[in-house]
Image (cartoon, rainbow, N blue to C red; front, side, top):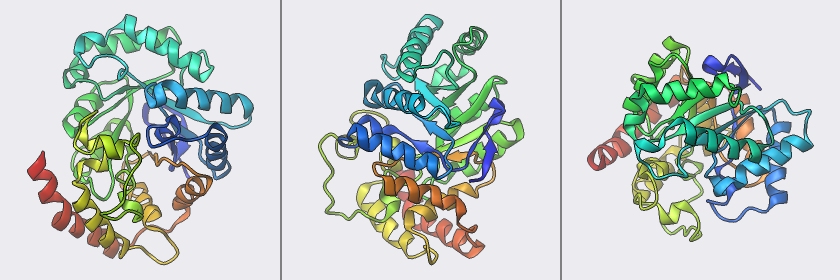
Length: 327
């Protein structure tokens, strides 16, 4: 699989990574044996980048990855985790002592002395502008608790603020055919600064897989049930902030643009991969087949300009007005 340098980390990662939110259990129950099988299928398909967080299953995702890496020392994987969402979301909590405590928990979960990459997990907006926060992150690097640090953001404005900081290695942001705004400024600015871009929520919480209808019912413990209107965390994380009925209708049209030999999900991933400035896209998977199919998107030929234009037109007609009206 194609490898790209992850910004200021200086390390190469696969253009399709493995998101592991699903393995924590926040998308419905996943057995431990199934989780290991998913990770194994991803690695065997060429994936060298796992993304997790300390809140995914309250640490379960990190623990599973830690045990997997112990069992597969031959697998050369960069693991990015996130911190901050286990505490009350106030800027005063983003201080060095808390960072150390959060790091200690993640290092234990992952079974390592030094974390490969730690991302601030969508903190309050003012945190991105705090000199003290970046000084604390630099201290963690100096103490060899972390090898590099980065940010995960909700808005383009937050991304642009972080990109201006010299120590930020990468920015994780929602990007998919139903969320195009990062293409305008964030990706070009990141490329100029040498900052990596990790594209998350690439399938709009599964909408772009084309598998769901207006009548689909998700499990009660699935965030697509309990966070549809932002009840538990940022609404943009669920279905990319798109109204579910609108998204289902748009996804049906998107499926009509899929080239022969590809699935809607692979087409969405291929679209992201070929956006200038993207380092890696991190779809999740709950099965071996999903992990393999996601990785296979990297081998698809680039989408022709006619398809890219059609996707842009679909967004303008179906998604833009609805999302802008809401936000």
